[in-house]
Structure formats: C-alpha cells, structure tokens
Image (cartoon, rainbow, N blue to C red; front, side, top):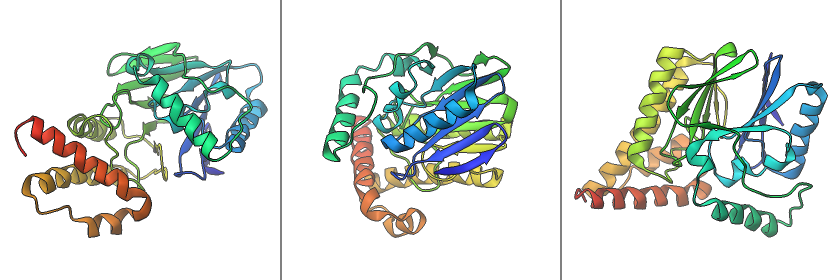
Length: 275
C-alpha cells in the first residue's frame, strides 16, 4: 500500500513489519530506496516506476544490508546502486542471502527475479559525502549501530531525511552492531534534524513524520531505551518493560529482539569491565 504521497515522494508500506520503500522522482532521475518485501508489493513498485519513468536514469539506494531491505534488488536490474562501503564489503553476504532463502522457502514464496547480494556502483565512504544525481543532491552520512553498514540520506531538493532502521515510531532500537555506535548515530541524527530541518522523515519501519518535535522525540526515546538497557544490566534490577510495551506494543513480536539487545549490551559491558 502507499503510506504517504507528495510531489516527488511516494512511500510504500509492506504488510510485513510495516517496512517502507521510497520512490523519489526528482524530475531528472528516479531514486528507489529499499524496495521490499513480498513479491506482489515489489511488483507494485516496479509497475509504478514503469508508469512514471519514461527514459530517465534509475538509482537504487540501500540504507543497510538487512535481508528485508535488499531482497528486491534484482527486480530493478538496470538501476545504479548506492550504498556504504561497509555494505559493499560486507563479509556476511552469504548469511544475508540465506535469510532470504529461508524466508521464501518457509512461506512458499516465488519471485520472478533472482536472489543475490547487491553490487554497489556508488560507495558511501565518509560522512557528508555528496552524490549529484542530475539536479538532485544527496548528502550521505554513515550510520552504524543497528548494522555496521547503515547510512542516512538527506535529499536536499525536497528536504527529506531517509533514516533506514532508525527513528521508528513502532520499534525501539534493534542493535546488531554496537550500542555505542548506535548512541552516536542517534546523536548525529539529532544534529541533522537541528541543522538541516528536514520537512519529512522516513524510517525503515513505521510512519513517516513531518513534525520536527516528533523527530526529536524519536531520537530521545531511542537514547532513553539504550540508557535503560545499560542500567538494567549494570544494576541487575531489570528493565522497565511495562513502560516499553505501553510505548511500542507488539510484545509477542518484539520481546525476542529486546532480549537480544540485553544480551548484546551485557557482553559489551563485560568486555569493558562494567558488568
């Protein structure tokens, strides 16, 4: 389904995990972000692109390498791919592809394109790197923490901040890389919101927002969650889960990631001699 539509921006939402895929029409080129998830949903995005594209260049940006964000790559084989250098050099590519195979086989899913790991044409290696796509200007920022290879993208022309799997209103932080890197990325995101004042924030899961106060609130809530994780491990008093489930809901689906976060933070603090 289409969650949000405005001149130059269309945000699609999957039925699974409310995962977003974004199409940005700059006038000169078309940029697709994280096309996903189910085959019919990706076909809908493909049809939409074919309807509006004409003969324009197509770019495909991946915010990070989680399997649910990359599995639509080969539905757009003509697109030039933008992703971080860490994404391009990810040593766990085969594990990610196996997650896609596992998902598709478990649910008997058939796709009309091959499954493979994206080949990157434009690598993002440094904070603030700029990509000029016709008249569109992208500012790209490294965003490790959730995964090691994440990026934020600010589309200057239309003042859109694409956050990948950060700043969601329906998920607390999922930490697969480092809670310390995640914390710094959140602080960087807060700085971007203050300095760039995006008109629209698009998370990887959940609702877009046009409200600056909500963007800042999502940063603060995520930072509070990280603080509570560390406090729970160090104090041994347990995590304030009642408040967590009141805020995010979906306890049956989110309990396992929450427990994994606690285990990761425990390992981090033990390695630093704090637990």
